[in-house]
Image (cartoon, rainbow, N blue to C red; front, side, top):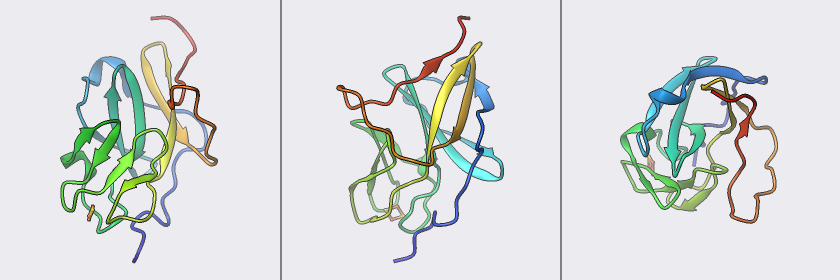
Length: 133
Ligand code: FES
């Protein structure tokens, strides 16, 4: 099986991609950052960013849906954890690229995650808020 994301990359430094006000709860928003398709979604107030292309056969994940903190592929129903891009349900077997997110002055910034961080006790990745807005 080919991993449709095998050569994906992304910004190595935090890059502004949208504003907090542009993201509605559970809305799937596709953006292109450094020529890479990225899926943004806010679930329970937390913003997540993962690759926007399914690793199975390349479906546009912005046409999928959010199910229990995962993104479900619209074509064959694979599910990927929004926290770390890992496969929760096949048929996909390769994880999605994942990006760290932070909010600075109401701007949403992301950068490519190069290593998997340890989850906190709630199983969620923290979002850094550098300034109030
Ligand atoms: S293309 Fe996404 S599960 Fe097949």
